[in-house]
Length: 99
Image (cartoon, rainbow, N blue to C red; front, side, top):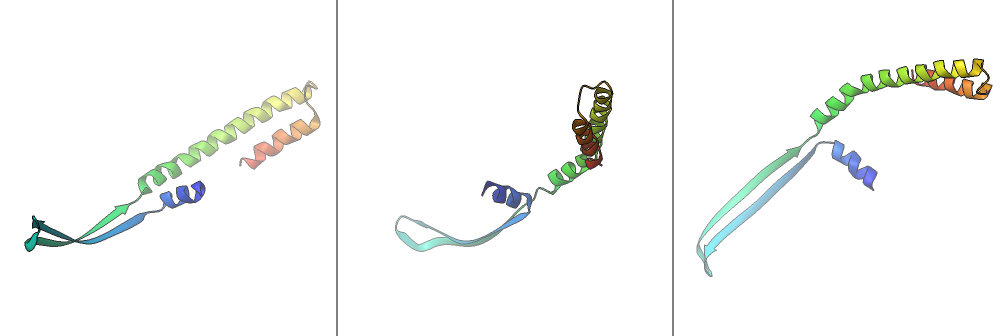
């Protein structure tokens, strides 16, 4: 339910309010002030979404750079026999998944 609420919070929402206000003095509403009202409340998180989308390419570039650094270290470790071939293949696959 939390995931559905958070997903719903990302979308813009509109609240429409309609009402009728009656004010009078004591128990006498004969000389009351009446006032109908309507209101619209619009909420959106579009600027936050734009900022997040703008940051994604930088995050992807950083992820690729880290995967390349790990692959480089794992290649050296494999050369010295410190890791198995499966560990090296995992590092290679991680590097190319991040593209």
